[in-house]
Length: 125
Image (cartoon, rainbow, N blue to C red; front, top):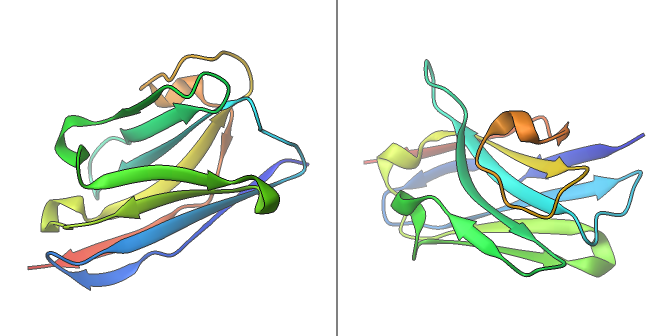
């Protein structure tokens, strides 16, 4: 059974940093497309960034470019989202997700087949 487990969320002051982790189990996603999404209260789930490990194509939502970075550790089957210079508007529940087919980094949540449970990120002003 495929599982994605996020961790690393928390409360941080504006300008601070957090690193989210997404550990996968049950299947190897070495060549798949993985992405991070976030959902603020009362709002739709939105794409933050994503990458395909085979093509090395990586994309970020405009508001996080230059502040957020996606990376991974193959040995531990973990994907990271390093978030720097955090802003109050970054406050949301953050989710990692995997596409089971397709090499394209897609921004639509419906294109992803596996999801983690989410981790809360709160940025205070």
